[in-house]
Length: 68
Image (tube, rainbow, N blue to C red; front, side, top):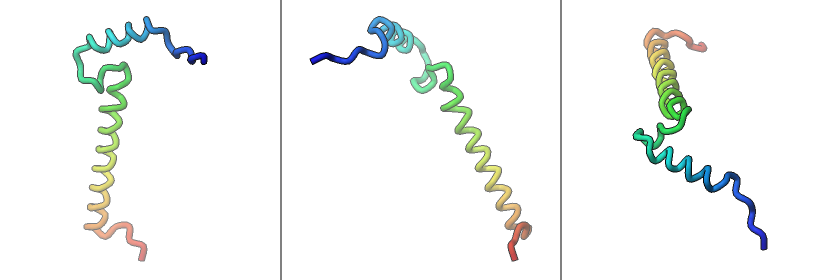
């Protein structure tokens, strides 16, 4: 029975492992684009939701946007 070839050579994997283990940052911020996915996007979503909640409260308190 033949085994499937690995996606990457073992040497490359060990090289990357050594790099990521030597970086002294939090685990979720080690990659080059990890700050975008774990910091910027949640901040954007939180800011948008706070803005929309605030606008809704303002509209309700002033009676703006009623249907009938």
